[in-house]
Length: 183
Image (cartoon, rainbow, N blue to C red; front, side):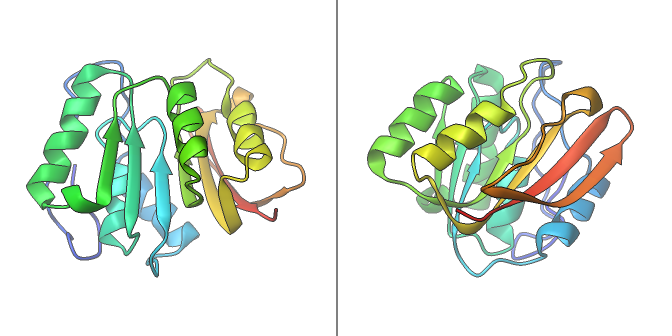
């Protein structure tokens, strides 16, 4: 696994040594960033079920200023910390080993507002709609924020105001939904 583009282009990242995570392939990562915009002019990103941290780190490499990575699994948490340390970006990355609900409450209380959100929870939880509703109700998204959701095809969510579906791509058994927040 590697960083595809930006200032850390071609740098290798560790992957999580666990069957509990599903790393995004380099090809899917490249396709995703071609859709959401190849480069960013600052902004704050949230990678809520981060695994190895690859998506969030890719966003930092492409210009995101600040990253919040979350995973409750210890091996994933440690892998994210290692990858961030290897790239020497500790000053712009915050890593949490906790349940996503606790972290969302904590970030809400701190008044942090996001421009880019990655949601790739373990399959079968059916929580993506609740998460984006919570973020809207608690004013955690900037106007035109991008939300990237990866889930099983049969668990893709129905999109409604204040979100619009920018693009939807099917990769085998999973669907990638890219939303724009129009709060």
